[in-house]
Amino acid sequence: MEEKTVYRVPQRRAPKLCVYAGGAMREWMLEGTQTLGRTVRAAKPALALPQRAVSRAHGLFVTDAGGCRYQDVGSTNGTLLNGAMLAPQRPHLLKDGDVLRIHAGGDETNEMDVVMIYTTSWHDGAVWKKQLLNERMAEIVVGRTEGLALRNGAVSRRHASFFRAARGWAIIDHESLNGVTRNGRRLTQPEYLQPMDVVRIADFDFLFTGDALYWQAEEQPAPAVIPAPPAPRAETGLSIDIEERSVISRLKKKMLLKDIRLDIPMSSMVLILGGSGAGKTTFMNAVMGYEQAKGTIRYRGTDIYEEYEQMKYEIGYVPQQDLIRENDTVYATLRNAAEMRMPASSGAEAYAARVDETLRVMGLEREKDSYVGKLSGGQRKRLSIAVEYVGSPALFFLDEPDSGLDGTMARALMENLRRIADSGKIVMVISHSPDRAFELFDQVVVLAKDSRDDCGHLVFSGAPKDACSFFEVDSLEKIVRRINRRDEGGEGLADHYIRKFEAGGAR
Image (cartoon, rainbow, N blue to C red):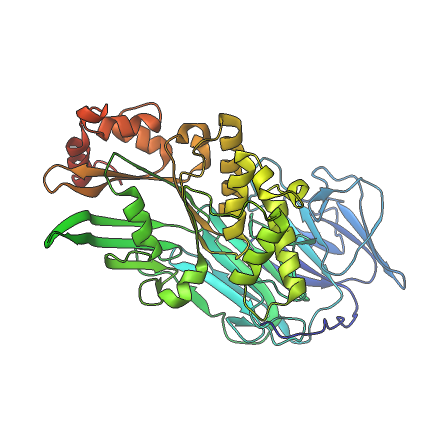
């Protein structure tokens, strides 16, 4: 349980401006009246920058006993304050941690952008350090005693992490006591970072540039970076290596799955497709560790099979059939689930807070006092998912969660799952009607039964559009028809596509 700490009110100092421009950090002390502008022969502003995004006369800082005010003086590109464009000629009183930015124009951040961090809580002897970010890195932990150590009472033991997810680098607050801000806004869930974002932990600033992380801290060793394993296997998420999954039937060994190897990044939503008898549920059970296969399943480097007693609390499973009591209310159902799945030391307030968050995420706030037996099919399914979500699992597995739902309800359910995945989790879904949520999936995993050994094999793993191209169809649902046997209403092409995949037809 996180120890209780009290936020240390930063010592107020003379204001300072930490400026990132042209690939370098610099610092300016603010005092009196100072003009911000571009360096040219005819103009020598007190705060001079050579970047063309900066106007010759761009802004004005006025510092006195009442604090520091900034106003844009009518510049060409304007000035953003915590992401919002400032009205010209209107002074704005700055507060500690405010982020000013001059954007060079266009949709994308470019090297001509300027970022300025206003601070009155800077540390004596602090320096700006730089950590290059590459594809071999998985995570940078920030805490008082872990990872990049910020020895400050306002920093929790394990406060936050910068981590590589499916769509880039992201930031997550590990439920710290004093929180994390991104561009001046409190973080409430994991968020993807954009170049020139500023993250503040206590009164320490971090600048993300896309390919590097700058941080302002007292002199200390470089951050403890958790490396990703050597390419091509990156264990920044779920790494699956199933040599075989078999059972003994009538004293004979029967093979169910064979040679399935793939990687799933963090924050991914994965669709599992397969022909009849291809082993979709068997595959899911093997990955979860419920039915262990011969092979290795790793989550962020931890072997799920070897550490199952620990890892089982990181796994949420929603079966096809809802397993919830009819005569309980929605709130009581989730409260009981929270008490079962959260640490016993959490306490009543933590249980209640987690239940309230789960109700909000799953769109069940209005139904909190309704009895389960009175819920619609879609509401029951969302509640079944919520029962697992309340325990905050890192891995989410769902077996046909959209079964029996109409198109609108099924779509809404899949959008909820997409939001769960975007919160830094991995969501794996078996569905027979995936086209209504085509663009929500990051990855499609297709299994098919090989006639040579009557066993399920991996026949494709990749993006949905690439799956359609590989199987030469225009929808995900037609893939199953391609690989099903003819006597099952399919085209009987499983063997063809298995050989195509083995030959390197899709990677």
